[in-house]
Length: 154
Image (cartoon, rainbow, N blue to C red; front, side):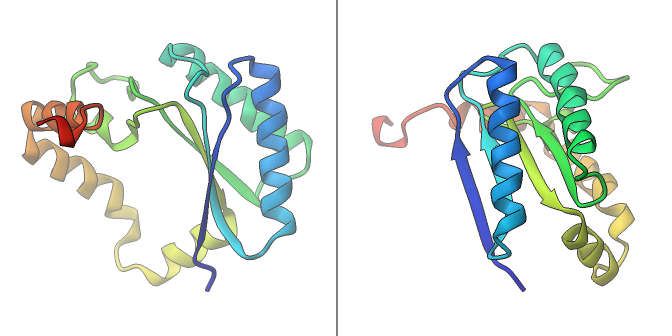
């Protein structure tokens, strides 16, 4: 099994340039079986969640146009991630929140392998939501804020 994670920080905020970086990242992943999965971290890109969410559709269209549909899967993470039919502060939104906007590129074969070897894999999202709901919004907000504070300063 491959155990390699790749993290790439891309500082540009232009959607076209981010798409180009995404294409390069997937190409690198495709050409290197040593890399299991990759995160394209976008600290300057799309601070507005709606823009980011719209961009995810464009990014998915790129993967389809380049013939990577069914080979790679994209998952979006964002500081203001919000599932449809939820309120901004609902605990379940924290399952896809991250300090910066980012795209997680997964190999479909790895996802399939994980699902096949994990008991009740279909229940994982529900368990995540339940766990976060039990923690509560107050605790989640505190943990979230701690991502942005310097522990040495306290």
